[in-house]
Image 1 (cartoon, rainbow, N blue to C red):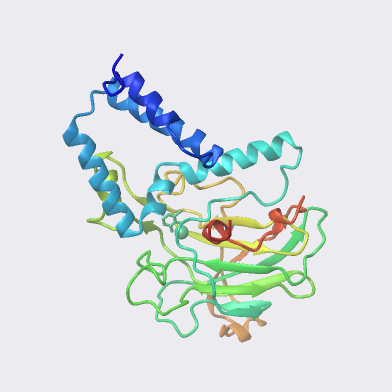
Image 2 (image 1 turned 135 degrees about the vertical axis):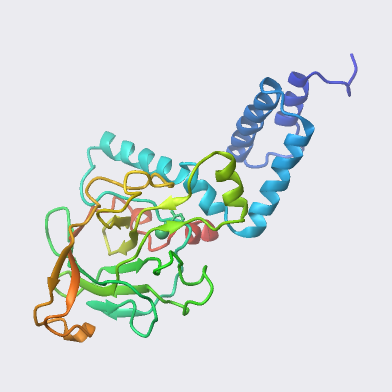
Length: 310
Ligand code: MBD
Ligand code: FE
């Protein structure tokens, strides 16, 4: 029998078993599974060499563009991971508190920190309705959480996020707010519109080929950390958006579409630059955090920071 002439099955077996060292068993098992599935896809769907090399070229361009996180969101992987966590929580009888929602690829660490409240659009040319969101951070027993650290970030009026979109200031529409002694937070910003994937990019290439749009409904991201509590990554949605139930990232959730009241502001918001009588879109929303089962669940690290320290 020849040592160097293979059938597909023999080649796959060689690829998946050849080694000179132990390596990492988990990585070995995962790569073996993925390679096996791809061999099968190529074999059963008669993938041509041109199709295969076009796919690798697209992946190379995707990596170089920094848009990997758009593709994982748009193909449902971010939401899949959340559904898996929700399922584990339901199994463990700990499905409670504010629902989690995807972090997305557009978080940036290091936003300015302030106590109790923040003005995300202060010193920024961002346009839009004056938006005020306020409430408390609570634990699942309803106890206010003082000194919780809340990162909040969202897009500007054209769907651009600072750091990723040209022309915005470094931390424009990004802040970190520490809740006060009563667990309260509040912020002023501009009400964001939706987001759309960049045109003429590896991401738009794929979604065009799939006949899909690349729109996310208007949303605001949150990442909340407090000692002993399970870190909460979530997102609120602005009601009424065309894409509310048709998010390209599949990340809208019941319970996270806020109520918005268009009112004339009462007194008490002057520190956010809002004189009484100013028209504002106001939302009151409490975030409810689970107890952490271990230190890892209370980790202050966002998803890519976790990878970097793993
Ligand atoms: C976003 O604003 C976002 O939140 C996600 C998940 C993907 C692309 C843009
Ligand atoms: Fe987003």
